[in-house]
Structures are given as structure tokens and as C-alpha cells.
Length: 222
Image (tube, rainbow, N blue to C red; front, top):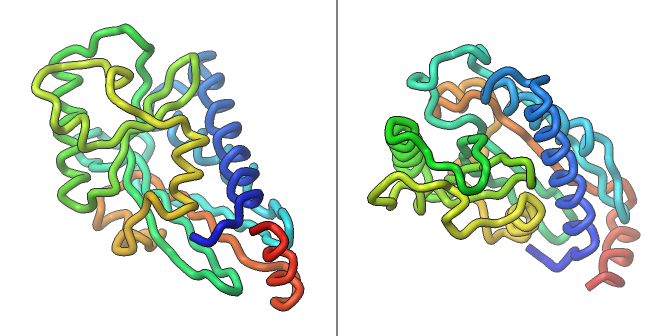
């Protein structure tokens, strides 16, 4: 996207901080399972972003679910669908990605059946969109691994062994349009059911000042 650097950096940092705080809940057993953790993480991001404003831009955040948190994993292709929409004076886009969520610490092996299930889910996501990822949660925080890397593995490996991005870097890339699929961009119940995604997180950015004033303000940041 256009170089709205400070807006991008501030917003991505708020999201990453909220997501990483959710890891603490998971580790302290406030979240009893992976699906519940996903809901907590997305809820924290929604709270952090909904109504947040920065340099003339205000964010809207919404979450949605189409599955019971206790739904079996074999009925779910993706733990969540992430959608971002920018409605700015000189830039408009709406795009998304699919993600699985896993908790695993660095250096720990994955059981073969767990690896096979994750690899299969990655392949299912990739059959829908190349913009598919695994959010790997550990005490050190969240890193994001391309689903293609997991699907291409020939033997069980710890996801931390693959190249990854921090949650901060991932959302910077997402907002800057290095990540995102225009064909996966509807955060509604029908889309969740079609994609077999458990949750959706929608993030929208729009101006809160007259367009001319916002253009002038953004121009100073380029």
C-alpha cells in the first residue's frame, strides 16, 4: 500500500502486543484448548483495535464465529480468517488470509500424528488460497510460518525450525500488501462456513477527518 508508515507501525504493534498477551492467558491455563485460545487472541485484538485512531485514521474491529469452540478439528480447515479493509482517500483494498493456530515451544518434537494433521490442514488451506499461515504460540511469543513450508516438509519438524515472521512483522506485511488475497476477503457467516474456518477477524481503517485534511496530513508522513 502507500507508505503510511507510522499508521502501519503503530497498528501492527497494537495487534502484536494484544496477540502476545493472549499467549500469557494460554500458558496460565485460562484458555483450556487451542480453539478457546484462538477466540481469546482474536478478542484481545478486537478490543485493542476497535475505535483506535491514529493520524486521522480510525479502526473498526469485529470478530465472528461459525463453529462451536468444541467443534472437532476434522470439521475445521482454518482456525481463523483474517480480513483487512482500507478505505482511505488514495488507497482502497480489502483482502484476507487463512490461519491455523498451534501452541508448541521451541525445541520440542511434534508427534507424527500431530504433524500429519497440521500438514493436512495446511494443504486444505492452500487449496483455497496461497495466503495461508500457521500462528505458532510459545512462551517467547507468536511467530507466523507459511503454510506452504509446513505442507512441504517431508518429516515431522518443530514449526519453529522454519523461517517465520513475528506477529508484528506479519501484520506490517499484511497492511503493506505483501500478504493478502483479494479472493478471501468476506468476513461473514456464509464465508466462514464455505471456507470451514472457525473464526473471522475483520479490521477496517477509514478516515475520521475531512478527506482534504487527511490527504494533507498523510502527505507529511510520506
